Length: 342
Image 1 (tube, rainbow, N blue to C red):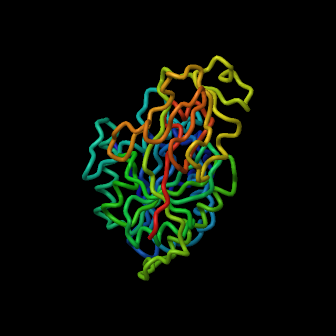
Image 2: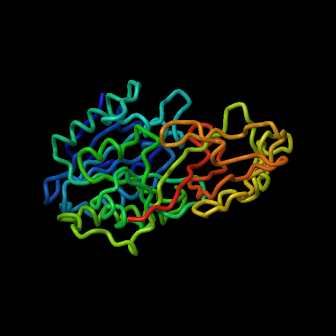
Image 3: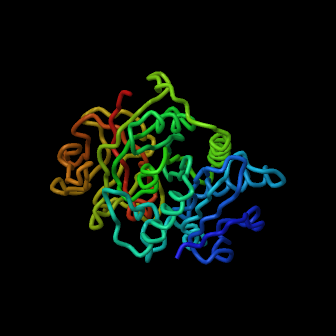
């Protein structure tokens, strides 16, 4: 069941993410009053190792410790068991950002009921805006993600970054569920260990708390770099991988797929057809699985093996490319994008 608290726990100001499991019995929704009553909803730690959002909230609450927030804040703290161990999720857990219900998709997991309770509670409270805060493991700029091509969503996103991604998959994410209630955004704050991510998130939350309304004027093309996620790239479980430029136990020349050096630096780069991604051991190997927006296998649309080189078949722009093998196995290797115009 969802744990709901209607006052701000004092221990929240100092507790590290690794200690939250001792403060709360499970996923927890905390309502904190403010001058404006329609609440800003913020979710943090849906992935237990993505801590920038939590530290941003701590900094914000310390700043307003002896004063009232400009607007009511509803804070959802997600996977505290994974946070205890600094993991995205534990091996026996579902992904807390793939189990949110919305009209096109109802995930089948016990935790879905908790997320449904969160959505119902915030619908009842007439939520004003929603922010879901995440980190990347690869080299990426700070950017915002939306699930609707609507001016209010654009305006909310560019308050964080002019780099904005529109996506419809993966499904079951928090921002899709809240898009049915209010303008909703996911913000990606770079690597969790970088302090500037928490600082940027805190400033953004504070700016949203101070809003009376979002700007009504149409977003201008020069104010936004808009991209569309068209495919998700996974590595099949039976394909071994290595990263040539890293010295660790996963790196060896017998791996089925060896990525090029510094593959993370390809994020948000427009790659031409024929760009080299890596080397495969056997030409016949299909080293990646690619799923398009319709859920259809699309490897042959985007990639091919020439000789033993894995290369792009068409122009693509990757995001979230990572060399973290745990993330690759539990989530994905990367996403592929195309540029859109407003």
